[in-house]
Length: 280
Image (cartoon, rainbow, N blue to C red; front, side, top):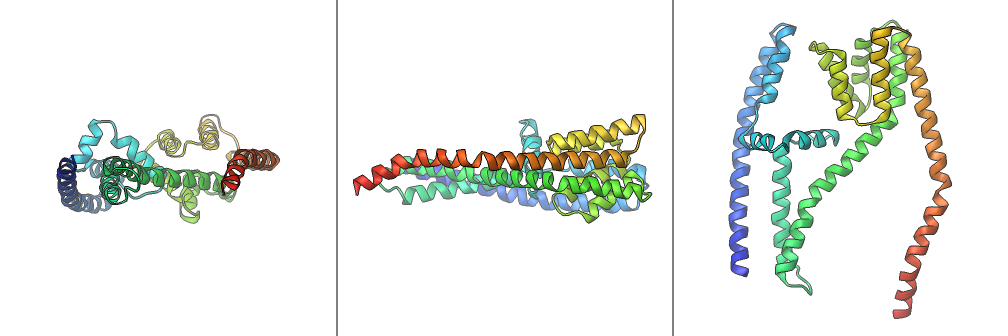
């Protein structure tokens, strides 16, 4: 049994190593192709830049194409983008595989009172989940930071438009003067608009990237103003005020319910503490 496990580990490690080397080679080739396309885009008219950048984005390695066929690439890529990680789906899976191998070897050595046949797969499963939990935590922090920065962004857009700037210029200024992660999200919208994409399409991508109700209200307000007219600066100012008021009420509710949460924790851990004290 132990021999079969070692053979499995060796074969798995060799496959992962070969996959990693192949990914590194293909990624370097991909990087050269993208740099060549971007150089052509700089010297091309605006109408041709979008197609060149789309071709650059479609340049991917074989493993990424396999993930795309399995419907995993787009979801993983979106998940990593929401976390602010400069990884692709292939790199994330490679890191998870390496973590699984390391966890398997740790489980073989640190088996405590259990047999290695139990601890090794258990440690491997836990280690495999670690990159996912890390990215999930980063994603939650990024979205929370965006939600906190969003009212200031709306006020910035309103002030810029009152100063006489157009909406697209105000978006570009916001993407350069704001902190992360808000800057990168609006930079993507600004770049889409500059490349000739319709405003609705650019904002749909923002809604996918930042799944917040406040962002949905903002996009609906902007698109409605584009169709019917009106003072967009005043609309954005009122929306920012509503979001701040909601934050204030949310803080009050959290403070009011803190006593109940603490009482619940005390009631949960008190029996455990009493049993531990009596066992001493």
